[in-house]
Length: 257
Ligand code: 13P
Image (cartoon, rainbow, N blue to C red; front, side, top):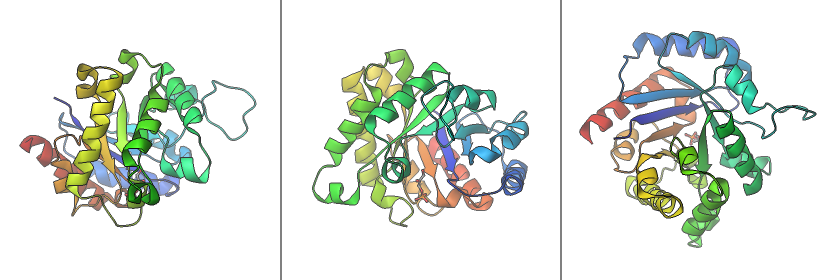
């Protein structure tokens, strides 16, 4: 049985002191349990400070991006080895904001996935359709392209620990969530694609998260869906109380499954 994973993607928010304060508040109310993994993806500038805070904590650290090369003349970029060195276990790859605002191609995302795995980082691969793609019935074609290209050539053992976040682009930061039923359809479709690409065993083990305007009010129904193993939370992860509520909802949802 898969554990649940709740990831806070803070995007470009919070100074180091704000990040530390958030974590102190979260720690004081978080009760330890082994059914759920809590992951925080702060900006690069806070990784080191939070890593110190997480030494005796079950909370895991993620980066929001990574470059695919190990080192060299790549001004402004951060390598997988550097993320590992600073204490990251996870890295978000292929977020729609990176694809759309920074022109990240499917090829680049694939290279980042390979580099992350090579350095023992667990990729959180984001996939999802834009509004016009939804409207023109292209959701499955888009998901297929993004998954096939990101995962091509990987070994089953590489995919075993993969996290995939289904984030319909039209639901990100808009307050508009996919209905729990539609989110489940998307998650199941992704799982079946992994089965076709690898095997039933692998697809049963892969974590599939939903992302897009998740909040304490809608989390319960989304997380109750059979193929949704957690959430990638943007806006609602910036407030420790709201984020804690989503974590508690996930614990309950997991127990009810
Ligand atoms: P929101 O929760 O703000 O819609 O953001 C979702 C997201 O992009 C998480 O990666």
